[in-house]
Image (cartoon, rainbow, N blue to C red; front, side):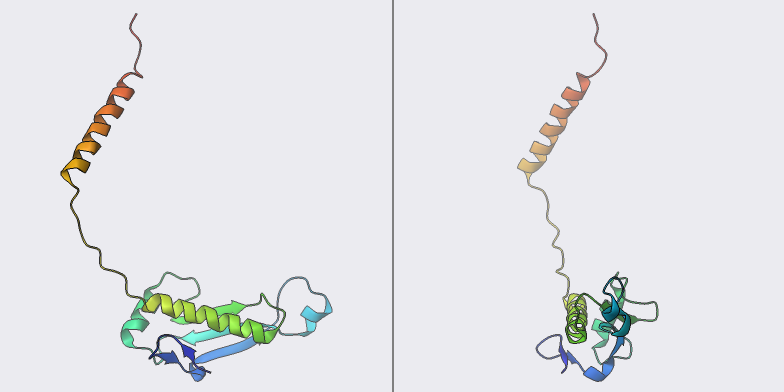
Length: 138
């Protein structure tokens, strides 16, 4: 089951390492003996993603990406290991999709003459209000 990033690009299963770990928190005997949480590891630089995508993914300011370029995602919100595995894969898919999306180029615009006039008029009005706050002469 490959992780689909776009219609043409997907991440093969062998590039994603999923390890079962013990969940934290309350849960009694079940939490002490069952490893229902999962930790997903994905090495970005060793992956089959296009180079441009790898660069964008590593440039993201995300605490789940280590200095070595490995994405580490822990999922433990469900009681079932299978559901936690699916949750971790879904998070990886969203993270990669966020990096793939190319930011829209900003088009510089100039303010209209009317908006410039409104701004200056508002500055004059505020200045008058502030001038009235001064000391009162008797």
